[in-house]
Amino acid sequence: MVGLSLAAALRNLPLDVVVVEPVPAGRDDQPSFDERTTALSNGSRRILEGIGAWRQVAAEATPIRHIHISDRGRFAMARLSAEEQGVPALGHTLTNRVLGVALADACRTASRLDVLCPASVTAVEPGAERVRLAIEGAWQGQLEARLVVAADGARSVVRKAFGIEATVWDYDQHAIIANVVPDRFHDFVAYERFTEEGPMAVLPLSDGRCAIVWTMAPAAAKAAMELDEHAFLAELQDKFGYRLGRFTRVGKRYSYPLSLTRSDRQVAPRAVIIGNAAQGLHPIAGQGFNLGLRDVAALAEVIADDVARRGEGADPGAAAVLEGYAEWRRADRRTVIAFTDALVRVFGNPLPPVRALRDASLLLFDLVAPAKHAFARVTMGLAGRLPRLARGVPL
Ligand SMILES: Cc1cc2nc3c(=O)[nH]c(=O)nc-3n(C[C@H](O)[C@H](O)[C@H](O)COP(=O)(O)OP(=O)(O)OC[C@H]3O[C@@H](n4cnc5c(N)ncnc54)[C@H](O)[C@@H]3O)c2cc1C
Image (cartoon, rainbow, N blue to C red):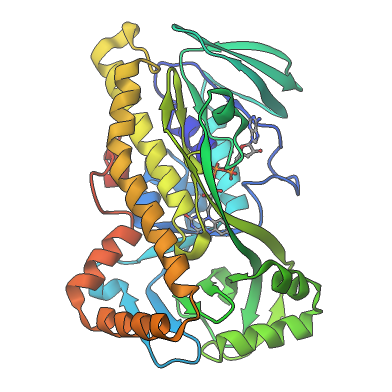
């Protein structure tokens, strides 16, 4: 998702860009463009507009007009609405698979962009002026690049090949995702519900369906995956309640182990680490891809500025370009990682004093408009120094 987004963002610059991807889109084991639904912030929507992928997906994207946050078995809750924030939508939901097709189409027409697929990067040889990459797969051979962007996910082999370590924290939780059909219309509300077992998100989708992201301990997730449809829906109903009436059907279920992966550095000589390769987050706040897209927009901008300044002499892998990028991304990255991790710890903690404190915070949050506004700006992807693409300005 992140690598192909970057390729789409760079496709009109006078640069030769090559994407290396081992798993073709559409295959069941494609780890990025799968059945998940992503909650996209407004900033992400603008970036996707700017890179030419939004028009194709707009009809399939569902607006989120309200967010409803609650704690199961407790009275505390908080609400956020688009109207209150003065925006048409707080964000949109979109299936990863649909986004994948649009990004691939945006890349297809670019004359200086090649997608090598199925192919993998198997070795990296850094050099002062160029990096040499060994590629295996349908296309075999060596590539030389002035800049290598590692967007190969949380277990990035490219990151490792550049000698960059990552800190991994296993949350000992799995997320089950599935689409469900409730008998009451969702009315464009996204629900975030905290339960004793873990947080659950129920997101609005097209045709009145909802996407669930349900987090629980690995053993509980294994058991829930094995339940038949009827028993699974009964369990879901018990945890979620009846705000959407009865859940009548559930589609295919998938389970994902959850961890926090944070690369120790974002750049190395002639290399940048972006997306999940730089930071793989818990999905509790739906921020992983949104943060990765801001990596994309910022990196595309520093590269485009270098091209504008130096023309033919531009070097996207020059140390000054990469340092500018790393410096720019530091604060956003730190804030979103800390915010997401804190949510997991506070809302996953069953101790009574912690629950009481978070209930009080939810109630307070619901009453204090400036707190809501500040929170909404972060989750809508509109806080901090925004790249041009996230502000709707072309590269
Ligand atoms: C259950 C769940 C729900 C989520 N919901 C949201 C949400 O609502 N909002 C949000 O913003 N984020 C969400 N996320 C996070 C989001 O899915 C990730 O941030 C996103 O997938 C990161 O994309 P990526 O391209 O960086 O990495 P990945 O999706 O991991 O993709 C890595 C790519 O690299 C390829 N690759 C692997 N090895 C190599 C190699 N050697 N050479 C070349 N290519 C290679 C892979 O085939 C793959 O295509 C969610 C995550 C989960 C698990």
